[in-house]
Length: 291
Image (cartoon, rainbow, N blue to C red):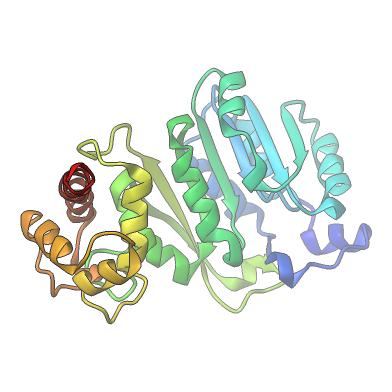
């Protein structure tokens, strides 16, 4: 694999900090990541941030089809050259933002679920994760590279220092495992932190008990909005509608201490809160509107 630094210099491209560009430049690391992805000849892969093609090339050698997504227009010709040089006919390069990608259409064309891979920029990692969660009905799993801090937040256990909104959401709808840890000197430019690659296997049917998922995620977001607040105070001030007495009733029925803090609750606890919110608050609203 040609050095990303040399490739970028050839095309007169300087990495942009504003795009979080740190390009993987170690061939063995690239091949190891793709190998641990378990990609087979029948898989269709969507790559987020194809960059200089470090993952694109080995992924294309393993899969039937690779959709290489790249938002930086300066890198498109470089990617096309990498694809041509490696004689790859199964790579489609898309110059667009990952937030605009039509995952259902790609899965429909593939005739099955997608595998998503990529080296995610720190400033967009959370938003991209949530988008993948929203489209998990057409995504079987994702193997993603993060700054170590964020990777640990995604995989954090209940009650740990890193445990937060993303931990709960990922625990609710997926199984998360660490695939690899990468040193800064494997990237160009060299980042100031280590990176981790994690695999996210989406569950087919999370146990929601009929809970509205948008509401569930809203409850989780507000519960973690102010960590020092107790759960009843965070939810009362964050979600319009129910007063503190209603929230006390909801939490009591969900068998959750109203004085607890969000970081002590598991994903199943939040599902229970969501279900009781819908049953109790909806009933209360209906009773008041009919009175």
